[in-house]
Length: 308
Ligand code: NAP
Image (cartoon, rainbow, N blue to C red; front, top):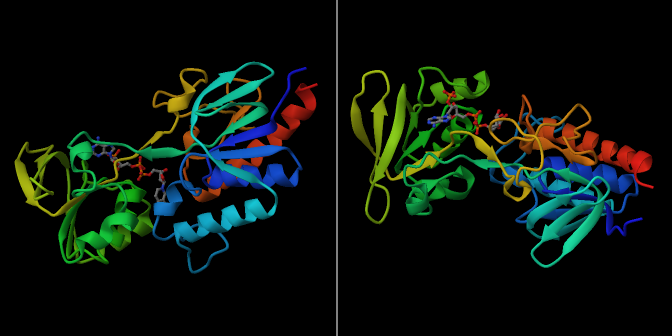
């Protein structure tokens, strides 16, 4: 029989991973949660969450993440700050390779979340100098300034509205003539005098020397090109799964999101996926929490039934 360090290792401390940790700790499993950055996942850069039940006034993403972490640790969950480099996924032993050591577990839950997609318009060069993916972090730098926000999904529309608390003008640039975002978010954006919609338009580049002075755009219907004068550019055009450490070990969809069944089990028995990293029709805190709970229960059953 193999020597195991843990029954269960959870990778990623967003809502899915923290919930899995809460359930595993309450099941008295020997569980470790690994997080390479700050616990909380993408919600720590979300200004306000108003669709997670139980908080009628809404709650800041940072505060919700902190409450989940405090609850998980109070129940005995051990959280380590460590980056997973790779995995060796044998039928019986799941090895998690960290920089400093390798951990052996009976079961794994991958809840490593997702990160903002880039457009290739100068993100690397201008990051921190005018281009940003995080309104909560950077909006105060644009007080009384003009900014461009790119995208038409929930993130772009919600965060564009948040930007208007600081910026004097927000151009919301979207590649179609219809937003993808939830209707309630659209209503708020359309009712906001500081937001001007720029329809059927894609960004092609940014201008500026020390910082951003303008965003180059092109109308996809007319072909017209122009520069919108702006001091900042926020990019919210979707997300990509955080799976660099995975290699090609698990089945994924065409975008790299992990395929899992109703029990959150992936193509390798004993390896589960939960939250935004999973191929799922809805990416919300509430769905991530549900995924995490199911994954923890499934991991517990897997260990009971499979590992001798
Ligand atoms: P998303 O829903 O995938 O939307 C991405 C947006 O960017 C779409 O409008 C898309 O246009 C546009 N886009 C994609 N690629 C582009 C490109 N190359 N150039 C220009 N535009 C491009 O991503 P998201 O808004 O980041 O949301 C991610 C997930 O988190 C979603 O499941 C969302 O529901 C969830 N979320 C929920 C909330 C909330 O409930 N309040 C808040 C934030 C995020 P098209 O529409 O034309 O495809």
